[in-house]
Image (tube, rainbow, N blue to C red):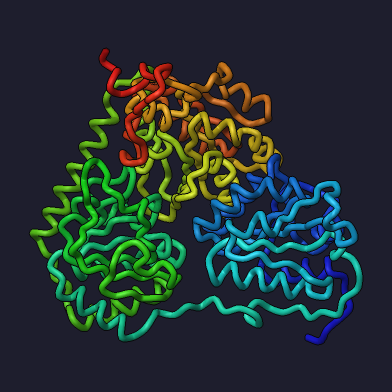
Amino acid sequence: MSKVKMTPSEAIVETLLQEGVKHVTGIVGSAFMDMLDLFPTAGIEFIPVRHEQSAGHMEDAYTRVTGVAGVCVGQNGPGITNLVTSVAAANMAHTPMVIISPSAGTPTIGWDGFQECDQVSVFKAITKATVRVPHPKRAADCLRTAFRIAYAERGAVLYDIPRDYFYGEVEERVLAPHQYRVDARGCGSLESLDRAAEILANAKRPVIVSGRGVVDSGAKDIVAKIAERLTAPVAMTYLHNDAFYADHPLWVGPIGYMGSKAAMYSLQDADVILGIGTRLSVFGTLPQYDINYFPEDAKIIQIDINPKHIARTHPIEVGIIGDAKEASSEILKRLEVKIPAPKVNEERMAKIKERQEAWDKECVDLAMVPGVPINPRRALLEIQKALPQNAIVSTDIGNVSSTANTYLRFSGEGKHIAALTFGNTGFAYPAALGAQIARPEAPVVAIVGDGAWGMSLHEVSTAVEQNLPVVAIVFRNGAWCAEKKNQVDFYNNRFVGADIPNPESFAPVAISMGAQGVRVDKPEEVGPALEAALKSRKPTVLEIVCDGTQLAPPFRKDALALPTRYLPKYAHLDVRNWNK
């Protein structure tokens, strides 16, 4: 295609269309109104939210479900800075995303004018790159660069354009993505694949750790075939409970905080670990339940699409830089030659089953301990029973949301959208809205504590406006319970800032906003209430009143220390004086 005359706004919109962008999320602003005016004719929907942070979380989840980089936008200055938390979260989650960032007009830069901010400097540390448009003629070229980096480095990219650069005349060609970026990563080096297959074929106690890359590349079936050929139990990485089929006989569950002891004990005695599509993060492999489960002497084969993550936290035997699906397929081909007919190791299978059953029993036993009024574990158990196989479940950060890692299991096309390692509250509900936009037919549920709900309940209006039938399951326990547990264990039950004086009920609040509101205070009502909410296909807030004294253990026992005090006025707070 030859160059044609267009405005920078038209060049931007045409580039978005080439990238398969069907919607952009944000809050309307004068800075990008010239571009926004083109959206209806172009066929791009603008989805308005109540807070820009929500836009970033929505696009994060949308991308995780569809694979298409999400796009969000806001007014220069405060609109863009409101995106900081969600952009940082998406970037740490390795989610491709482009933030269209209008900035102050070039005639007034540096005068500290209305809504002026050096947005590029603000976002440099929390994105893969910041791309600044140096001239209106470069509007489309720089946007193509932003998408190229977002996909190549798997993260967020800021596309910063002075607000006066949307206007004018440019000569531009509209390019298809294959003309300026390459998505295929290949399978990695053939030598590394050969070595990996050799080590696996000779392993006595191999274990597979399946991560985000397996989900994104659609490689679960291949992982299952490798596992079956080796009789290798499959663990999932922290907060990626959807990275393997929970109904497969070799499933042992997720590792990490509140993960599966079956997975941890399986890893503990492994002689070879095959990590597929995972960076094997330090937080995802820390000791849990007093089990130091990640073995120091096992040979590690690590497959990751990003060379920066190979051997970043654990020394490896073989590193494979490549797509999880392509690399796994090549390893499977080699194993099929080395092990022509899979022979089930009955002794290993018996051990795996024993660990699965012991973990299942522990989960149920803990859930059936009575609560006042509801044990949060019991609620999570009932939720898991009621979820359809194709459900998408988003989880927030906090005591109950983290405990969901124990109970959430995915067997079909369902997905787990978690806040991951940036760990900000207020993630789950807007993420669920983005997931629902991505897959309109799917049942979508958000698991949220009442602290995180206070940061996201305003988006019920967005759900109603966009007719998104997400079910927000709000656990009402009246406190920031993860932090409350720290104050129980380390500060002698001295609670400062932990209690949340909530409204009498969130159900009427939801109803007043145009959604359904349901309050549950009996454990046997949790499952039926969720089933009814999902069946209604209407935005719903399901409030579960649970016991605020039944708390999960702290994430890291080494993260805090028992208090010592030296000034006389604080002596009574010193751990040495607690029993005096």
